[in-house]
Image (cartoon, rainbow, N blue to C red):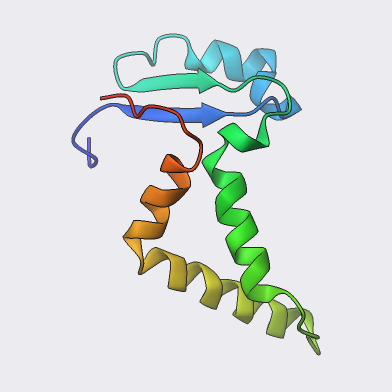
Length: 101
């Protein structure tokens, strides 16, 4: 309701996404939830893979002294991406898939 419309969820074939419990829960949610199942191993179709590649690029070639320092750097990388909506649109466009309306 807060988003003002239906939600489209892109799901890869990770085992927790295909359990009986999840499939049962999603039944009856069609009024607000649209699930698009990606084919097996198709990282080029998953915009999240492009997001993670960008985050990893921002963290690459650095030596962290602690897990806390790594977590802070990861948070900073995600904040940087969040403040650049054109990147988020680019991750979707990078898949080459048409956006559903």
